[in-house]
Amino acid sequence: MSIPVVAMNAEGVEGGYADADEPLDIALGLVTDRGAEPTTAESMTFQVSYDEGGTWIDVPIDLDCGTATATLEIPEGAEAVSTRFFATDDAGTEVGQTTIRSFGLK
Image (cartoon, rainbow, N blue to C red; front, side, top):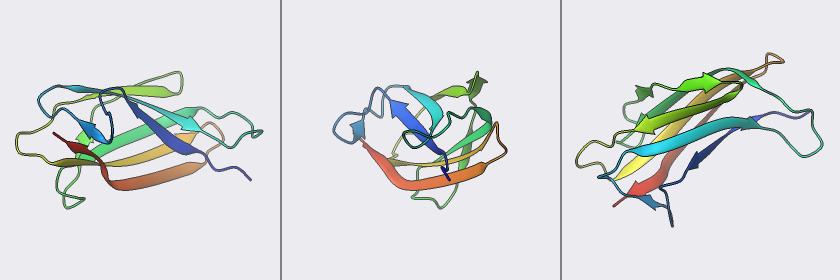
């Protein structure tokens, strides 16, 4: 059995850090193990936290053909971004994942 995970790509993150003064474009999609049947996201939620998961903020996403895009506007004083995703694929599999301190801010 292959369980999908949400892959996040943020082009502005280099060496584990992003510039806090610039909006950050994010791309999201579901990936599965090699050799597994491809899957498509039917629904997805993206949240961020700037206090290590103490509070979560819903981030608007544009979900199109199974992939999603979003833009983060980093609040002043934030030192790191934690991420949380929930997704359901076209087979009905639900997945959620949380990463505390996904990347730092400079």
